[in-house]
Image (cartoon, rainbow, N blue to C red):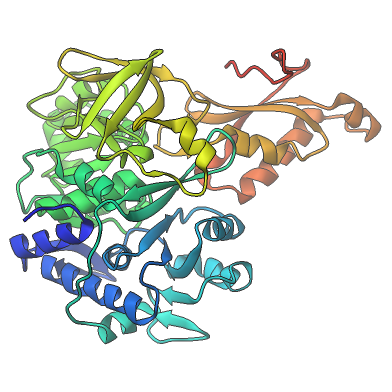
Length: 503
């Protein structure tokens, strides 16, 4: 069958893998499996619910960590020809409400870890007609039970879906200080997941470790995982990674460089008393053979270092606007130092040293942001903002970044302007530049010395640190400032009086 939509992916996987375990996770102390047929049946129930509640075609936000309920909600929504809006569960409630309004969300499906969001939207988001709890056993105070709805709406469901219709809006930070809603179609996501045969056998055991609202996890762990028939084990907590690696014994995992670096530090700390491959087996449950790295730059040395432990690292490259993978190294087609060979559905060219890409995975545009869309897309070409080159074999090499966007080692994208605008509201802060330094976010501040004198602030660095601490207390972990530099002179500026952003 032709696979052009996410509904096609689910149908293909149910027909191909049936009662094989699609997902495996812990419920208290027990391990539970959900088959490919379960995924098909339960997602159709959510689709039937969408139609019955008059929500077909509407925008639905989903917030929470990786769970079976999150995954089923996502496919149930998009396979009813509606639009899913995955939300970062680390954001403050007021920031989430702002995104829900901007994305024209009319239904919220939430994990109880963000019950505060469910409470906040009742006043902040008047357009939201239905709120559904993934864990609630019964309907209570106007909040519906996901479990009861899936039971109620069991049955067959099909509807016509245009492969080029809007499927998902994913918010990503931009350099203007305002996050952008990346519009991805069914074809964008489906082609990205299915166009490259990585020769991963059906039944391969994987483990999800990345945030599910990130497109790297969504496309590669979830959509591609379903298409090729893996058994995906869900890690229930970042605190339990080591324990769950030993419990589930995955053969393949997707990781960001920050995690790869920290894992290597632990492997190295184990010393030389045992062979390296034995140390790796003890650390990863015994079966791990492959790590796919993406989301940020990984020092190529780690490919060689992990090979000594019997583990292959496949480095890739992408961005949300390309659904996300642009290039990927493979076990049999790999160039160390590159970020892989262009995907079969992707072509690239270099314009003024910047990498531009084109293909069926390039986004539709930014939601309700026509100017930003026009800046990023030109005749179907996506301007990546990355500097680099492509060799004669179509392998991509990244040499630097054109944009100000901070991409941390954990794969998180951070807009420096967003943080700067917030901290600049303080009277003591006259000028500020936020940047990445030594793998953390640094704020360099030129204080208002006249204001400090007037207010008799004698210890200016200490007062600035208080301001940073207050900001950090309300910010997601990856947006926290961990280094402060205080200037004695103003920043150098260009002719239009804008600060030059040199490191």
